[in-house]
Length: 406
Image 1 (cartoon, rainbow, N blue to C red):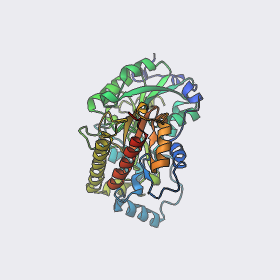
Image 2: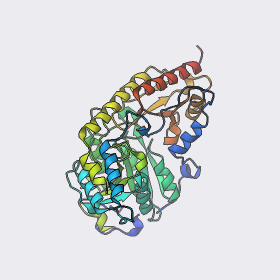
Image 3: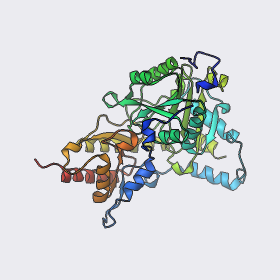
Image 4: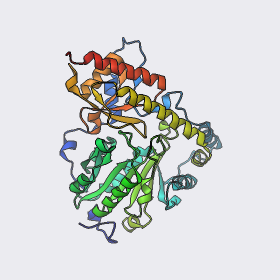
């Protein structure tokens, strides 16, 4: 197999495709569309407030409000009338430089503004990179299972073949690198790594990230590092950017201000090349204030609340007999738990569980089938602590009510 990491000349044909059976069966769904279906099952006669334990938008809760610095920066930019026209395709130069400087704090090989491309949220960054990769005939991409389903949706749209590798719950959701090597072939162009993890709440160690990079180099593929939840960590493992391993294998990092600044509706993201060896080159207004002036206390407060909520979530779920939580979440805003439907009397699977939970308890949880793991659940804990306690209490009551009679 031709290795793009060690070979200067790489044919354009190295990078194109067919849909696999998973995509052909129409299994590609978005989180939002599935949650909309579940929400439609809510009983309008239930006077209790809806508790959303399935979404990834904490901004609707008072304890997760963005910093005034960000609001004032946006207001100042708007009032200046300097940014009402079209911007350069790659983004405003000052904004690109600010993002390069911000991300470089976590990197041994510093970025320049030329490495940064602004996008309409991280979603567009994903669209751009997958569209580029799909231009190579017969190309395939390796995606984690469970993972963020939009990668599959976009890959299907671009006719880019998807192959799934497992994340191992018994090993803190590490990548099954043996499976990765078995899946890859001469048409494999990239592997997606999400860290901190969505939906698993894991944070990869430096050693594991290094092994991922070494595997990518061996296979001659690039790494797409999804770091939307960068620095939202509260466990033993610190956040390490995948870009630190760009000298081993080229890394494309996608991210945004959505999660760390708690503003998903602002839709500002980036696509960054971490490529100190120049392998990829061989082939192929308010932002400065927001990034530079936000006080560290704002981030610490957010992480402290997430840590508290993660503890509440983990401790509460341990007491639900039909649910198993393999690992305590250490990052992002989610945790994956296994559902034992054999312990429930009238529940068919995870989708049935979530639909009935919404109808009976006005609690929304995302079924694991949306993320590639049937009979698992993704629970969001980025909500008000008191609201979280209420929601998990309702979840427990639901499970007790539906438990098989001894």
